Every structure is written in C-alpha cells, then in structure tokens.
Amino acid sequence: MATTFAHNDDSVVVVIGSGAGGGTLSHDLTRRGINVVCLEAGPRLEANTFVNDYNTMFMRLSWLDKRIGEGELLAGLPAWICKVVGGTSVHWNAVALRFRSQDFRTKTLFGNIEGANLADWPISYAELDPYYAMAERRMGVTGINGNPPMPQNNAGLVMEHGARKLGFKKVGASRMAINSKNRDGRPACKQIGFCDTGCVIGAKWSTLYVDVPKAEKTGHFELRPECMALKLNHDATGRVVSVTYVDKDKKIHEQKCRAVAVAGNAIETPRLLLNSASSMFPNGMANSSGQVGKNYMTHVSAGIYAFMPGEVYGDRGTQMNGIISDMEANNEKRGFVGGYHLERLPVFGFPWFPSFLKPGAWGQEYAGWVEQYRNAVNMWVCGEDLPQQANGVTLHATEKDQHDMPVPVVRYNSHANDKAMQQHAIKTGTDVWNAAGAKKVFERGPWPASHNMGTARMSAKAADGVVNKYGRAHDIPNLFISDGSQFTTSSANNPTLTIVALAIRQAEHIAGLMSRKEL
Image (cartoon, rainbow, N blue to C red; front, top):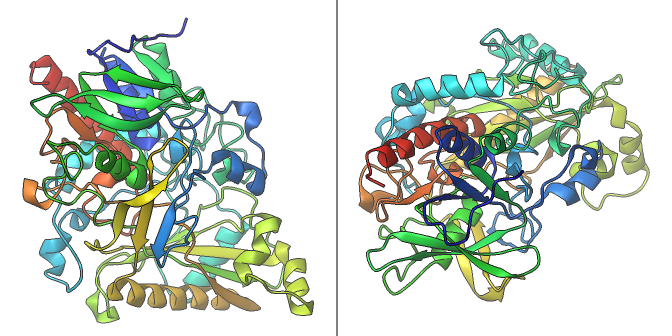
C-alpha cells in the first residue's frame, strides 16, 4: 500500500522536483527515516511508454510550458529539460564526470574578468570527494569500482581515430552512469541507442528507475506526480511553513512542512522563489542578496556534424560514449580562460537531422545530405561558461501560464570569453573530423540549453549568493536548494554527477540538523 501524508502534517520535508537532485535527496532522507512528500510537476511514465523515437519522446518528456528566451536563446524553447518523474535524469545521456579541484576556486585562479561575476565555491573538492565516490557507486559509473568501460559506437571510434591522428592523448570512452554489466537489479546496456529518449530497458541510471522506487520501499515517501508548486508560504519569523501547489485536476492544495528543498532546475527554482514574494520578502524568498535568478550558466556549446566516406550509423550504441579532454585544463595562451571537452553526440534521428544541418534548406544539395544520414557523425562542445549578473531568470510582468503563475523570462548572452572558447572548440572539432576523413563538416548550434546552472548560487557570505555550502538558504533556515541552481561556476564537465553528490551530502546535513533538533 502506498504511503500517504496528510496536508496538515507539518513533520514532513517537502521536496519539489524528482530529478537528479530532488530524487536523490528524497531517497537519502527516507533511508534515514525522514518523511518526504515529493511534488513533481510532470507525470510518471511507465516502461511501456518509452519508445526509440526522438520526436515522440521529445513531446512526452520535455517541459513545453511557455517560456520566453531573450538574448541568444531561442525565444520559445530556451532550455531543454524534462517535465516527468525523474526530471532530466530521464533524458540525460549519462556522461558522469567529476568537477576538478580548480573548478571550485575560479575567482582565485582567473581573478577579476570584466563582465563576469566570478566567485569561489564555499566548498572544496576535498570536501565533496567522498560524496562523489558515493554517487559513482550508486549510479554504477563505468571505468571504476569494477564496472567495465562502455564500448564506443562507430561514431566514437571515428572521433577517436581523428583525434589521435592530431596527437591528442586524453581520448576514448567516457565515464558513463549506464550499467556495463548487470547490477542493482537492472540489466547491462544492450547498445540499443536512443539514450536521451529514456532508456527502454533501465540500464541507464535515472531517479525514475532507481531512487524514486527505492524511496517508496522505505515507507517514508509519497510521490505526487502532476503537482506543480506555485508558492512557498512562511510564518512571522520567515520560516517556510507550507507549499501551495496545483494538481492535475487544477485543484489548489497547501502542504504543511518542516522544511522545503527546491529542486526544480535552474529556471523553475528561481521562478518559484521569486513568485513567493511577500511583505517580508518583497524581492522573493531567499533573495536578500538580489542573486536569485542571476548568474545563469548553460555551458559553452556548439554542434559539429560531418559526413564520413562510409556508413557509420551514428545513432546506434551508447550515444555519448566518446570524449576528447585535452583542452579541459586552463591555458590562457589560447585566448580565453577555462577549458572545454569535445563529446560524442547522437545525430538525433532522421526527422530532426535536416533542420540541424541547415534550417530551411531545400533542393538537390539538401536531398543529397539527407541521403547520407547513415554516414553522419556529430560531436558537442561542452565548455566552461562564465557567470554573468545579467544572465538569468525573471518573471514576466503580465503574461501568466495555465496556473496563473508568471511566465519565466530566461535571458542569456555569451561573454567574450565564451565566444573565444566556442570558436577555438569548433575549429578543433572540425580538425578532428577532417583528420578522420570527413567529406563535409557543418557547424551548428547552440541548441536549447540542457545543462542549466546557477540562479541560486552557493556563497560563503550571504551578500554574495543564495545558499551556503550545504545548499541551505542564507535567509531562511529551513529552505534548501538541491539542484544545479546552487552551482557557483559551471566547470567544463557535465553537471549531473555533481548534483547527485551534493544531494547526498545535503541529505546527510539535513538529517544531522534534525537529529540535533536544529531544524
């Protein structure tokens, strides 16, 4: 029988969002006997709803509620995240890389850069190291802990061949949070492909397959899918006392709570905080610093497609298993600070392929490109994006969504450093494909952001950010941020493993506060 909690039960922790942060946090709290109500805006998809079709699963997984993109972002789809139980951990391609030691102290390393809002994290790599290890064991990351590396697909081998011809050394299989052998009650990867449409067999780690079911088995967890959080409510002391949300039948509810952890991604998290403004918090909750919604980061990105002389079948096999990491270290002689990776990326299916190559193209040349789909390969630039005060999330002054909640406006423009890095990376990727024998290379993107970070960042001082080193709000002692919003900098590495490690650490901290009756 499913566990349920009353709306007036103020002993529960409310977790908003069930993705990499919220799902992991929920699991770890419930393992410690703490009661959790998890509000998830999207539905819970069953195994038979996953199909190997990009268009179909894009519509089933994606957060398509209206957003307004400004600056360099797409106007109607500025970010690609998921609105389902499991969040974007259902969609991700499972590249599981740790941030490096220097990623936590970029202000110290880079100094003052005009236009950037750099800060050091209030946490060090050494502090996070044991939690990275816990996350890697839980997620079954390949290449460590007795989990064999995942074999590269043809496109990955082609990329490695080109890179090694150019003299690159840090090349090969990525660390992936996909089972390379049967483990944790889930099968090994069968190299089906279509990883980012939702793994049809459950080999890929996702909170949908792993943490949510395990939390439910504890008897301390209630998942409420299709329940959208609208506002946080507080008492006269400023502590959060309840969450107002709307269910799938458009009924409004108020869930009492002992504490709240917001894990709605770097757009929905600040949106909720800003929408919770009151006379005590006129600029939104946890926003005395004015940093809620600021410092939005997406990673410096671009796509580099190519046609090879022979058939590659780039959508087959593990989608993103292949990486070139020689450029990840900082080297200011290149004309920018920070570094980047080149990562294998799927071709994204025949229906989307033509629009990626050249939107609006038509005629004989275009038809010839389409006929070479089997020969197509793709790689993606993942580079360190500098935080900027002007990049971020605000609430639209007049436009409301279906729940009468202000539509988020997401603004992003590249820093000059980002642009220099992007052009360097595109040239490097082009050189790699050409070295591998490419017949034609295409530069595309960037696309809607799927690595969304910042907007409620960690800081040592309350004046500089939103939360402390544990993701606890500086202003409100029983409010926590549990997703990529708390990132102070972006690194050149994919963010999910760090989100999970921080959530494991945060759960330990919350449990300690509760046991000492400090929360």
